[in-house]
Length: 507
Image (cartoon, rainbow, N blue to C red; front, side):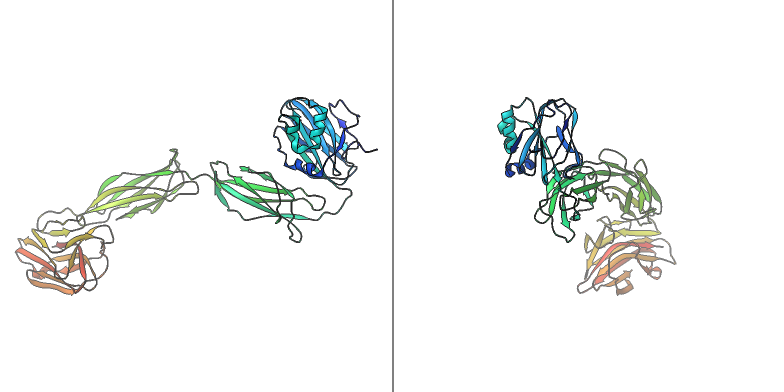
């Protein structure tokens, strides 16, 4: 006489009205039996062996099946044995929402994979339909006539103790960091001691945070199994662990591997604001600035570096750091200038893992020595794009253009044969005087300077870009006259150009 059912020699059913009755037993095709692994698993019911999915049991060992439901209904449980038989071990048992029960038994064999299939139906299923559904699990809903909830589990029955071969899991490399909301493909490989791929083995996946598109896969012919990971929304960098588990089988031991990466928050837009937005300062003096860094939500951003830049002048610190209110301060020291210089101030936040960069600007002027239209100081400056002067008379041949100075500004371009003349007056004799020239040449240029028709300077001009700190000083005291004085600068060059930004006559 055949045993009551393949995995149990003795059955004790909690709340089972038919303890001791002979279970129904039928033959089922191996093709239909394999279809169980493709049935949809319902999250509202569960069926678990005490050693877990794919747990290994030997004949004579105890086994416990635990099952339950979060819905009211009727439970039927089938046992599909490795030898091609199927038996009913629960037949339309009423169950209420939240109830959990256990079935106790002793493993009997035969060796192989044994499957258990649980059905939760809204109504009692007639025996003839239940038997037909049990024998054709791929057509359960078609046979019963309405949707039912399904769950299944599997165990490995081993006829005798054997030494299992080790198995191993490795992973393809993944990026160390991804952004919140992003996706990442994770591929694991299952192989034996010799590095051979283990084909068509189940891999179960777990993740510490976020979601996977599948939590159960099978290895391919190359031993690979892959899933897609979807990163959650996070407010701070979060470490993620993804585990792949092979439960083992009758040949290979269980194996587990894990891979680690970090999910960073999505980059948030920031705003850095500088104040004051406009300013005026005298040369050699200082002006204080304040910068405020906030994110898109208006929240202060603390402990971030702010870079300070200025078109002229120097900062007390090139980089400062925001406090708990997102604020930071710095001081700009204005250089001494002749006339008036325009200043552009820039503050910038370079960004971080979770924050986008931002920048802001302020504009102002730096004034030089206060100039009076009297003896002592005469000047001419093209920096603004137009001649700015207090000479009594000015004439020149040449073009005012930009692009030949270190700082943004304009110059007077004097090619071969062009000249510049200015006139100033003296009411008393002076024993000292000097001409200051801020100018540079492009290619070979010979410069001639005349004062009152006397040659003061003749020589080759220095090539390069015009800079505030590089000035040519020419002694002119011996050529000064009472009354009107005429100063003339001429250019002699085959192909070069002389660029003059400003000149200064001092006594």
